[in-house]
Image (cartoon, rainbow, N blue to C red; front, top):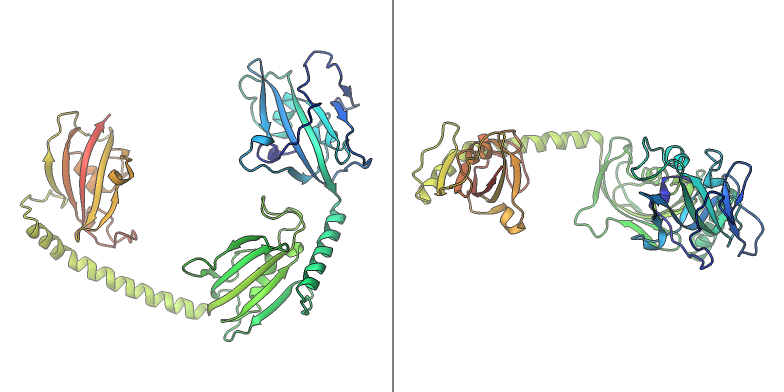
Length: 437
């Protein structure tokens, strides 16, 4: 058993499995040699039971006493996304471990198992201390309904059979390579071979053999970009990409051994599941080509930044003139224009302030507004949690006050490109100091 008990499972809970009455003698429970107390409900027809290493799937609920009251800690029927508990059955981690109990069930059987609270908390969940309200002498009650189990060999055989059927049903005549990959190029590309360091742009879709789509970039505005050689997906897919060129379109079948293997991937991909990739390579640049492009882009961005830096003083002067602003700048360049004098406590360094604001560029474009979000910003003044212009401008206000702060880039975001705020942008903030505390 592992921590996934807290997060996964669904329960078809039998009416006969009412919560057992706890007493010192545990009436109705049997006991194994290792000390595990249990009740079994033989509702299945099979007699085979899972062993260590088998992949088990079951529904579950467990409960125990907390603060003197019986509490349900997990009920799979009430999970946001109900799904059976699934994992490869490990060896029992201690005497009386729940894993021993699971191994007692055949497919379709149910059981109730009692596990000592301390053993579960410290040995299974690996917690450093016991949660408040849980006594070390208490027991957790686990209700298990075993849905199925498979051997790893059986799962591998099943995958091979499903893959063979998929190939036959889709009339795929291509043969797998020596690794077991099917690489079916539906449109031949041209250009350089994709190799380590190449910058690749592509769209791709990932599906299971049954057609269930797991992921796709085709609906995105731009293809995904990555440097080949750095991890982006499964090993099999990454190898297949190296056989393609710019303009290639291909269907790639990746067996689990080159995908997520025995572990699977969360709730999306189970153990031993093959994956289908549809890929389109839209562009490929060699490492030297990409590095040259980066240098050229950096030069271009620097030229734009220099131009913006040189233009900022003139744009600020024009803004002040156009808006008839006669206020003089503070020594640091901040323009503080009081709109409404506050009557409450003064904002000072070290105090926490709550502020509503609307931020604009000099051209009037609003780039952010706490008023539209209906969520004022709260921060400690003078601690560098906001731009310098804010720290200094808000410190000139009292609670209840309103002001306009004109903040040159030197005390704003300087040469940083903030997306909606270009480098070397003077910012205009309309602020209201709601609270000082």
